[in-house]
Image (cartoon, rainbow, N blue to C red; front, side, top):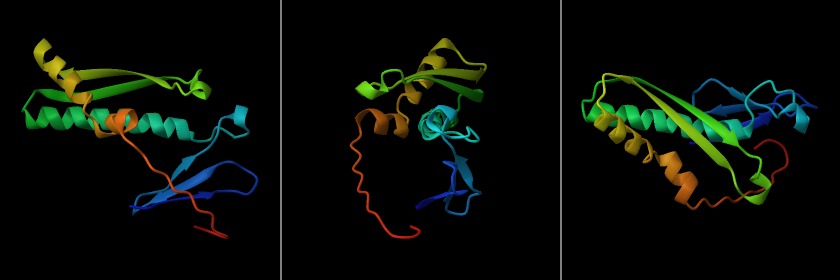
Length: 137
């Protein structure tokens, strides 16, 4: 998989994100950083990846275990006040919709902790190699 990010308009921070055959997404920076706040910022996409992974993990687990889960909602609340010190805190609240016992809710919450993005964020090693090219990527 390859993701291409390009400046949408000269003089702005807004970026156009294209990957595979999907429609383009956009990212921008907050006004405090010189952006126009016209789209989610990179931190938002980081947080979104956790929320969507947890939702999908819970739904797949419930489907596999034939649990009566009708839907799920995930709210992520960010505290980045100490990010410069290397501490980024995310509070995740999961709403489980369906006729579920307390035991089933507990099992679904445990399953959410196994989402691959959470594992990557909390215990994975990520190696990044950045190279510069003249012109487009």
